[in-house]
Image (tube, rainbow, N blue to C red; front, side, top):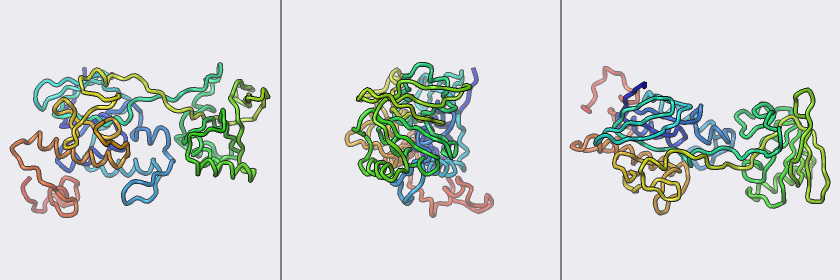
Length: 350
């Protein structure tokens, strides 16, 4: 079994996990980040990389992809190690300030503290239940959109009635040759303003909407060419398609977190609001994965939690040392850790 050693193991490489690297780095702590996905960014990268985000302080507008790229650059001076495509199987506390974290890739990590930043947990998309259509997955059938340019000048059919389906219909309408949104009813779960935009574009003949469900398909020479749409009035319609995108939502994927011996509340880890520490001392939880009274699942809330958790971990690992607030604008200690100052410049003692 391969072994590694670090100060802190962060479970989850979403936006909060990435910011946790930065906050720990300011405290002089090294981190290894583990994520079951094969790329950093969590759901931001996996589900809506091009979706705009408006509530990050001082950034009026940026795509989820841009936010993740900025967080990666911000964490880079602290040289985090990313272990992607690996799932944490168990966490064992062997002593105070000593944990062993094992992954499904036969890797064992020894660390002094653990931060769980796993977002809303592990999820997988709800798939389209049409016999044999899975043969087109990752070619013409998609459950996520990592690159919008793939759909340029293509005839696109989108299935679903939630925010993801409607948002992507509006985004793809700008690049695709045609966009057809299909939902089983007129009862959408998306924001009303975006629904109004969709039907306004339909009125202008710039996109289309059909009420119904996919019940079959046709192919030619191994390529998906058309879909059968069955409506409640019993009429079957055949629509041409080059790219099919399905947004039926996500379903929870069972994971090992429930067996880690942590106090839970509706599949979330209970934490205090001083340190964001779990029921096991030395294990912290930040972001959507945690629970406390008044919890709001916002990225900016997770950033705040990551900052306080970093201070708490620094205090835990140096109980006899006063942990002061170091300001990034003026602290030479922080500047040295970030690589801003020349190494030969005289700095105050750490």
